[in-house]
Length: 285
Ligand SMILES: NC(=O)CC(=O)C(=O)O
Image (spheres, rainbow, N blue to C red):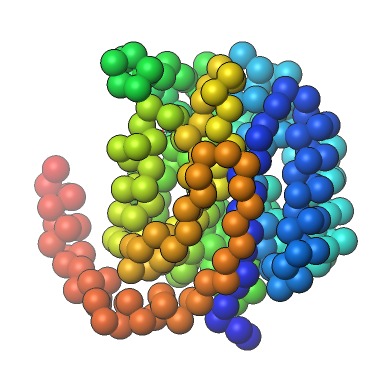
C-alpha cells in the first residue's frame, strides 16, 4: 500500500443557515475532487454546519449518524470514493445531551469514527489580549469520554477537536497507539491564534514525530466568535508544510508517511524514554 496520502483542507465560511453551510461544503469538496482527482481525504472545520456559539448550539444540533448532515457526508464520501473527516457538528443524543462531534466517513460511505470533543473549550481572556474571549462550551455541551483512532489507507489517524490539541497527554496516547497523523478540526479563537496556534501544532508534531493537521473556518469579523483561520499541515520534523490565510481557502497537499519513519529513526527519543523513572515519580506524587 502506498505511503502517500493526498488530503484537502476546506477552510470555509460558516453562516447561520445550516442547509446553506452543508450545501457549500458539499459543493466545495466536489469541486476540489474534480480539480484534483488524486484527492483521497477531505477535511472540514469545527462546527462547519452552524455558528460556533453556546447560544446557538442547541438550535443546529442533530442526531449522529441519522441526521441530515451525516447523511449528506456519507453520500458524498461514497459518490466521490474518498474519506471525509467531517469537521464537527453539534450532536444531540437520545437523552437530549449535546456534544461537539467529529464524524469520519470511508470511501464506501460507512461511518468509521465518531469523536466527541474530550476537552470542552473554556476561557476567560481579558479584552486587553486582542479583544479577549469569554467562552464556556460546558454551559451547553457534554464532554466525550473516548479516544478515536481511524484507519485511513495504511495509516492510523488520531482525531481531536480544537481545544483537544492543548492537551499533550492525548497526542502522546495517539502516538502510543501507533498513529502517524493527528487531525484536529478547529475554530481557534483569534486572541490566542497569533501566540498558540502554530506553536501547539508544531509541539504536538515534534514531541510525537507525526503529522499534525488542522482545518479551521474562514474568518468572519462580523460573527460573535471570530475564528483565527490559518488551517495548517505540520510534518513530523515540526515544519509547517502548508498554511492558509484568513479567508476562504482550499488546500491540497500530498504527504509522505515515509517521513514519519525517517524522523523516528534519526531522532529515536521514543525508545529513549525513561518510563521506569516516570512511572516511579508518578506513583510518588
Ligand atoms: N474551539 C476551541 O476549542 C477554541 C480553542 O481551543 C482555543 O484555544 O481557541
